[in-house]
Amino acid sequence: SLGVNRIATVKGLENLGALRSLELHNNLITTLPPGCLGAAAHSLERLILYRNRITEVGDSLAGASRLTHLDLGRNALSSAEGLRDCRMLETLILYENALVAFPEGGMCLPLLRQLWLNGNKLTALPSLALLPSLEQLHAADNHISSLQALEGLAPATLTTLDLSFNHLETLASLLPLASVGFSLQRLQANDNPVASLPPYRPLLL
Image (cartoon, rainbow, N blue to C red; front, side):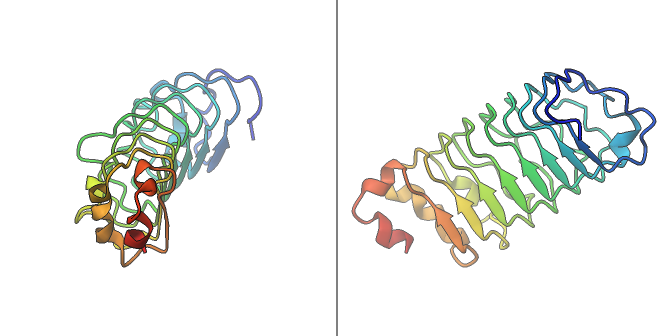
């Protein structure tokens, strides 16, 4: 592990074509230049970059076709662009960034099981149409006022949905939850304005 150092640049990976796990958390990294992973881009399965100062992914993950776990939590990302080659991802952690929206059309991550988006600035859920394996969606502490992304597009595998501490205001805003009612095992929607309305709890039950 190279975590908890004062590393500011990702480099020196040109000859590490067999590297499977890289931990660079709690450092001073602000940018991820194209090609910074070197030969390791094609072998990495686990990449931990939380608590840095990264503002964008860009093309840094080009060729990262074996990556299954990516942790970019607690950075300064305003966009989730740059994951097009990471189609093997099973866990994607983007909590406590500055995300306001997702790429139009969503992300194509067919094996993704866990998506952590809590603590951002999202006003709506991202499209789930291209996330057919998703089991857990953590989106607490955002500015979400619309659940339209759930309507007819939510995967049948979704068992955990955390929408607490958002801006859901009306009972009508909760209606898209009907699309996932049969698969959900855990739903959190507390601390939304709608939670103060009398029919709120019976409606969810």
